[in-house]
Image (cartoon, one colour):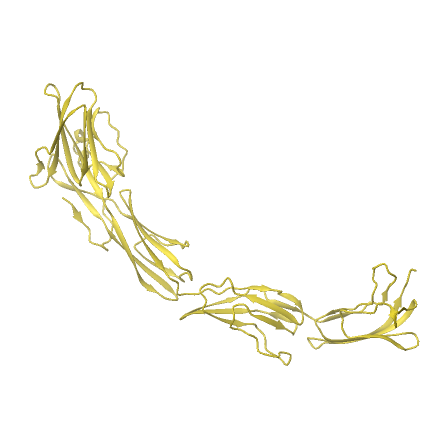
Length: 409
């Protein structure tokens, strides 16, 4: 009675049944429970008097049928028969019961008929078809390399054959199977048995091939280990004056076995040793002002990936600014003579009094003169400074001029 498709055969048919939710005005009928879907046999189009015939689809579990005739009082006899395509027709009853209703269970795919009679004025027949639908699928990896992942799903479904009770002619319950691929983590996938995923993910991924056939679902999951890698990194201390110590963190790279950093930097005489460009979290010092575009290449076997950070490392150009007044009078407002120095490689500052005597000298631009001479407060008035320096960009600076020391008390 049943025909089967071979695994891997394309699941597409020339016509499809019309799915319906069937309600009947008849008080006598065959009903069922626990089914997945209902369909109407196509022969009903030619024989409307057979409109009560129903096809019940069950998912993998055997079916059940019930019959009753509510308008008739008293006991009735129910005689159940199964369709035999070799006759063709229904076999003699395989189950008989009496009462106001009758049920048969554990039914295989096929046609079933019940004769309901009471020995007086009631003698009628009703039919129904049971389709125990057990679709199955499998899937396999065809190709998995740095560029693509090819997957193939295979479908095994049963085509249910039923028979016209008037002509005994066979017909098939046909519908196009709905195949779907999903992935976790999610990757958009086309809904066809064979798919190609470009740039497969660098993480363990579950790919599930699923079929929906007469409301019954079957699925098969492949867990695929990654072969590709994804490069990515974050930058700490991305902007500042020279020498700028920058830390890189490739913690968001995926499936990386090896690392190659390109700091966009040519080592100079100031570099004491080559930078470590093979660790996932290197530290690099930039001495020369400018912008540096950093790139990371990660490697996993035969696959690699390159990531260039969208924002460059910025080492500020050298600057040197010198004020000409300060007020070391104890109010914490402008208490020291300080210069503003950015990206300076060397620096020297000297303060002279009006007689030309050197009273203070310093070489750290973060320090300055606090207005004291030999531990005692210098007198208010005019002093003179000479400030020289060289930036990391080799720019030379020299400032000379008067310095005014004010004290309010």
